[in-house]
Image 1 (tube, one colour):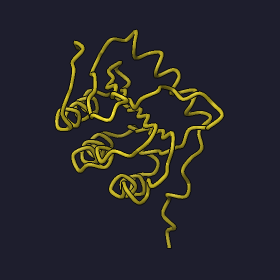
Image 2 (image 1 turned 120 degrees about the vertical axis):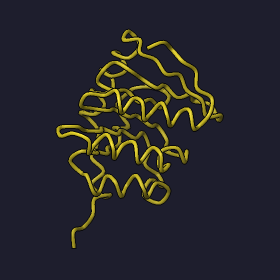
Image 3 (image 1 turned 60 degrees about the horizontal axis):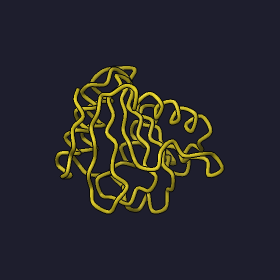
Length: 158
């Protein structure tokens, strides 16, 4: 896969769906601040649902830097996590531990990654360059192990 620049939300959503389609068993997402509607767009939620339910033994690990307004602003994502809690896991990174990256990214277990720009304009770079992906995935794994599960978002089961 060559490095590709994406400038529109439709292209970015399609790239996320492509990362999910290309993954074997896992997707890792890091979002410092979930303030963009992209994170609960119907296309993204459908891509995640399709990935998780297509075959067994798949998982999505989603790490947030901050969770302010997460339940309020991203109801579709939270509803999916509540329906598939063992497959779609949500955690908040430990504030005293270094974040895996300065900007949001999505990586799969085949060495493909979408790195979103940290600016106000929505844009991203899609790459399959393993030398860029491996260090971020390693930092993500370290942060994931120290992160706090978002238990407050689980359903009560009443």
